[in-house]
Amino acid sequence: MPLSAADLAAISLSLQLATVTTCILLLLGTPLAWWLSRTGSWLKGPVAAVVALPLVLPPTVLGFYLLMATSPNGPVGRLTESLGLGALPFTFWGLVVGSVCYSMPFVVQPLQNAFSAIGQRPLEMAATLRADAKDRFFNIVLPMALPGFISASVLGFAHTLGEFGVVLMIGGNIPGETRVVSVQIYDHVEALDYAHAHWLAGGMIVFSFLILLLLYLTSDKVAVGSLQLRS
Amino acid sequence: MNTAPDHNRLIEAKFSVNLSKPLCCGGASRFELVIDEQLAAHGVTAIFGPSGCGKTTLLRALAGLQPIHSGLLRVAGVAWHDQAGSLQAHQRPVGFVFQEASLFEHLSVAGNLEFARKRAPERLGPTQIQEIREFLEIDQLLPQKPAQLSGGERQRVAIARALLVRPQLLLMDEPLAALDQTRKREILPFLDRLKSELDLPIIYVTHALDEVTRLADDLLIMEKGRVRASGPVDEVLTRLDVPGMLGEEAGAVVEGSVTERDSQWQLLRVDFNGGHLWLRDSGEAIGQCARIRILARDVSLSLADEQASSILNRLPARVIDMAGDTDRAMQMVRLAMGETTLLARISKKSASQLKLHQNQRLWVQIKSVAVLH
Image: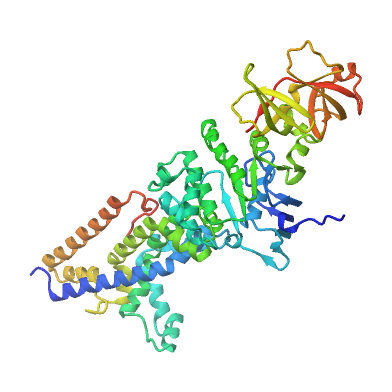
């Protein structure tokens, strides 16, 4: 068996993390992307820039400030402590918070592009056909933006699987809790166990390639064009 | 007897709309629409004017797609907008047909129709739906996606979809403007039937005068965000302060009925209030209503009935008044024949030679007439 129990645990953890993160990002990213695609507010520029920051920042920078904020003495840390949730660093949920921040642009930008592409007209048309705002969102916006949702989910998922720096900063390296695949590979390499590193790293390449291939093959309308993939 | 206006048959619009961005190209960066009109909530009311005059903004304001800043909008006695509040677009019982058909591309034709049917306040029964589908001849299009349809087909589906929400008022924003001549001719008969067969008031925005003269009962002419003239179409089109805007296309619309067919000469006789005309036989049935357009440039005047003329239609008339034309060589003359008003566009020199004056009796010669339907 080329994969050890620890490797399998890391894979399982990575998949859990990516799934939870993608779900949260779709919930947070949809209203945010909708607002960005429709607003005329001066806040649009600054908000869009903040959302895009993880595209250009080294993950360690983001991880460092997240660690500062969520540590027991940080502002977020005090809040979570007072809510009885304990400190986030070096826990699975700490990883989720970090991943949500880090993968945000990979979900928000495809959604924003998809929403913008719909334009005003179908929504006006639907309004004159007695559809209220909720009706319009679920029956016009969601189906018309479906390719955007697919690409947002795939990119958010794939990017979360691939993160390393933020995980290491905020999650550390606790087996079964925060040791995801990318960290496990790092451990194998540190221990000069290149055979196991190969299996995991190669597996990551194949898996990532396959989901991106699926994305590009299934829909040429999917809005990935404007994104610069960066890990 | 005091005839109070019947509020159930009226659209009372007294409001203003401010736009910071222009809707059409070439407009000002700030645009204001001010309206204070009572429109008929029956028949076809055309809103006519050049691009950027605010006619589309007015229609969007009626539909609730464009916020009204101040004022009042009451339709058939129900407030759609007043100080107390404003009905949102989805709460207004209108049907809207956009210039480009705006079908939902992710749904089939049947899906588009179903979207509307499900949301109607009172759903139509299967026979009524079938009637609408047959009326617009879209049955064979149902399984198709909008992208597969021609422009004319898309517009027919859009009209059917608008009818399926059971509107009390149908708003049409230049529904033919995006179509070429062939497609236009394909859709116009449907609009004729829409008008004659359904008891549904229609507000019809257009910048094409031929559509106005063919379809409209009432006409509202707009310019730079203000109403220039409004009233029954035959009245507005023969107002002397309006034709200047219409130029070569100025002319009267006359309603009459076909009374006789001359099969020897292939002619039809159309009687109207003020006389009769002989037209080329285009197949209308005896007794059928005919709407006739007589362009001012096709009407000439003479002091006597010139029997030795090739002009078939010579009628006695009386000069109502006259006004200068946008062209300095020309004069617009308004004439009465019975209760019908006609316009003649003649040279100022001729007017002077004929010594035209108010209430003068003379003969009009009509060179050509167009039957609109």
